[in-house]
Length: 384
Picture 1 (cartoon, rainbow, N blue to C red):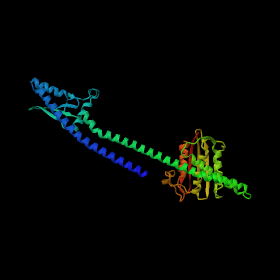
Picture 2: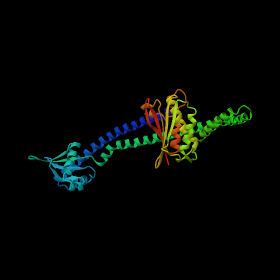
Picture 3: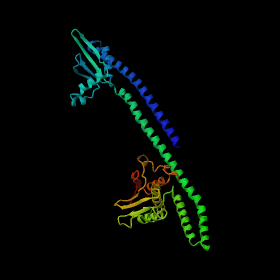
Picture 4: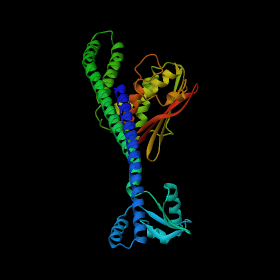
């Protein structure tokens, strides 16, 4: 799926480049043709002006007048042979001319850079002439800007398609996650139910008074795990629960299985009752995953500190360990599916943890601090 996504992105990028390049070349060619045609039109307009100045034939005058009045798009400024601006200009914004005395000279300078003037010689001795400087028409400007506009359109098209592809990919991944979790819960259900029956039979056999309760605890644990997997993919019902009590219970459970070289500490700032809307089985799973990751990072020896802060709008839970820490290169990857620095496991614990906190509880989870050889702190933020 990832390879397919990359191929799609490459193909879209290649098509976009071809479209833009083709548009640029075509627009440049079209702009040159329009510019040549406009210069010819200005030359005809100047000839018409010459006819108006010199001809006495009414037919020629009428034709010349029609030609000069026909230019409604190409801006023209008339100067004398010394480039002094006359009052004769065409298709220039008169409002700006009146408002800004520098507008016309500045426009003339831009026309000089755009094209050579067309000169109308009135007298050779003494030399008297009119110069007609002109600029690009509105149509020519639009043609020149067209590739930029199309580039922007293509860019947004690519972005929209990529976002749609990404959303589709994420949706597919979510379906895979949910399907795998529910199938796991379904597969565990039958053997766990069978184990419950065997536990009840063990209780009735003399001599199993010590073994049966411990086995029953593990079976209940399997039932809890099955329930957790069954809730993945469907929105769980959130209940108002005491966060402190849930964290204490999970700490006690993990501490009994951690060995004597690991110390556990819970700091609640003397708070014993902090309520939040959560799914208890899934929240327990989050704390369990973080504690197990901390134990793995410390390799059986060190300190684990959980701090719970009850702020005005949020509940903040920090899980800190004194383990080997996470490198800066890996901090951004710890929640990715399949990422793990351990030799065993699927690397799904923190991925599920993030999904539970952010999707089901609308909270946040992130690495607050990590230093190689000193430890790591994960922070959970729950909205009240």
